[in-house]
Image: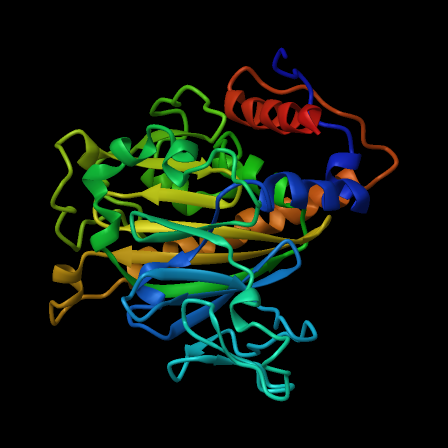
Length: 364
């Protein structure tokens, strides 16, 4: 299939039926980034992930192994966990009739059931596939994931991003955003910077929007690099490096930032001294929840004068500029006057993203 030269028709961003189809195509059939491993460091720690209108319990078993289950009791289907995160007291119990499960999903107790006819081993919690890479937890809701393993879906990214050693970084700050725009518009915005001189004055002082190189598009991701402007050394309010470089980076990697969209919902922004990530959670055709997190090296965090404020303030400002223009895009595309428009030759990554959307649609 050749790359589309125009933007997609409006229905890709406005049609509720197409949105529901995309939830199934992308968010129940692919490996989806749900959170960070450090959110649940110990057995019994858990958080809830809301994916494609499903509530998923992500926890650790007695041996600290990752476990994921549908938040649905096997008795009468009641949702068991209500708090978004917490710690189980060695077991998971339904608040309705008291059915109780081990941290590995096995049914331990089912009050008032006839032991002569009822076999507990037949009623474990429904399991969800779970895997970890770089400290990121991924879930796959498909009965038989294709690709079967997370590493197959990530292709060459684990090797490409190994110098940043993300598994050893620690979460310092999180901001949640609600954006009145289709999730694909946010992906498109993230993957081109032709809008940067118009929309991002702070960013444009620190980084050259025409610099860097794009990686060859992959069925699992798109992305590329950008370089700093002048004496800037990192993406922050003034570009001044206040922290040590991440220890695994080469001299070349210290001079650039990598921006990658890992399908379907993870943005990785790999900086010389920290990593920023976004997770996208589509809620409706015109509504997306976004979690943004900043990760730093523990040695830097331990220093008495450590402060992440320069990076957080910079990106919170830039994020809000992007979300606002994405909402304007949603409003314009929703107009009866909208017709697909031409992409610039420099918008190769948005074109590759559209091509991926159309390719996956054709498989249905």
